[in-house]
Length: 184
Image 1 (tube, rainbow, N blue to C red):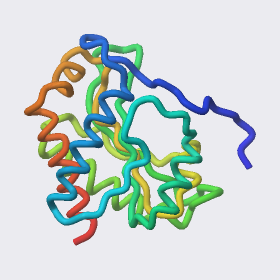
Image 2: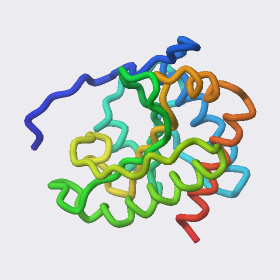
Image 3: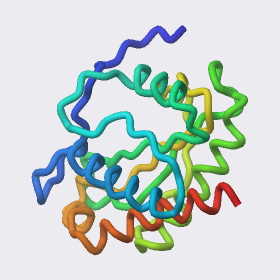
Image 4: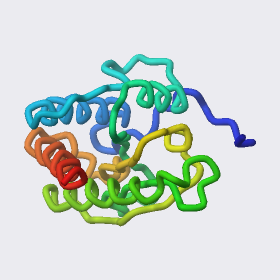
């Protein structure tokens, strides 16, 4: 029912220091998160396992819905013109969302658990939760969903940090800890 049309596949932000695009970083983190979650006994469904895909956010959400998953974790990294901005945030649907208002409360809980655990483990500034109604991948979801913004690729320190192996381990453990917390 939305009147706005969006690009089917968008590249996202690019690291100002590393030059690595968001889609490469997020897939790397997602693959490591899958391994961590499987080690904790979870079944994991990945929408994509390679970088070269032609799938819209609506198609991604439909695939997750069909997978039988209990929750959906959307992994992103931020970028803005102000290179001093830093920190992580999580997005979820509002109570007034015209498509998935019934998912607002469990999605807010999921977002809160994942963001707080992620920031506690990584030490990244917690920018808080953001309730949104304009995210296609959220609006097509049938299950609780969060979109975590891992940090800012437009901030040279965070960009570099998010690409180091030790920090990535903390990122993954933080997200997994949040998922554990959500289900407890």
